[in-house]
Image (cartoon, rainbow, N blue to C red; front, side, top):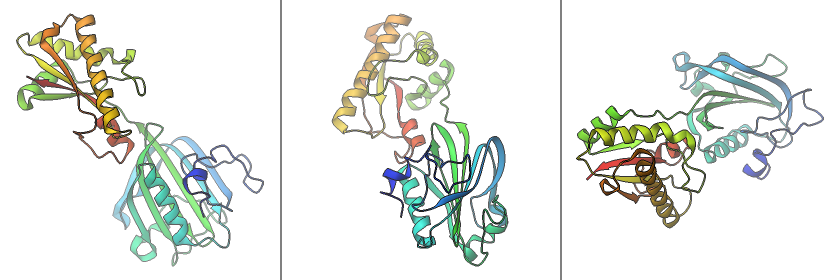
Length: 293
């Protein structure tokens, strides 16, 4: 079993075992199945790999990024069902979502096409294998994890791609959004964790909000802070209100926007724009909104 499931799964990032291939280590995102040892190991800082997201030949996508491939020899007592379910559940708790999870015939011949180590580092029985692709965010990077099991072998692939980025919306787009919908979601305003202190890298986004307000001198607005769902509702209501107040203070103190044009409020996680079940979703929900009065 995965030792204490998540507790041990994520603590093996730099651990080496006597039976492992020299120079190898577990990926910190996935860890290893208890009792297994590494028989194949390869890391490329940048590479491209074809990854199945659906069964059959047409279900592959070409991904680019840092590619880690690790092959394990499993203990005799490990069953394919338990191994695959363990990794799927552990990654799900990390906010990852299943793209494909299949067994042998239902995979449509995936075992012949995936990027895998040659024998004996990876041995796939085409009549008895399981495959899993999951996607999510790891270390602020869009990440895909693949898991291939057959008999006493398990190969894990981790493809770490582009960073999750928030685009700073120019003043003209803020204006268009407010005119059309009455509101505009502002990304690129960053705060210290669990605090209302605005980080210096937020200057560009706040400057665009100020430019919008300067171009619309007759418009009064409410600055609303939004959080993800980490923590209690009461706590996040207070935090989001303090963050909204900090933005108002920056607009009045640094950009000369009249204070009587601005109100502030905190909505916590009561108005999400994405599910809070993944790191990307939570990042989208952490935002500031400008709402026309």
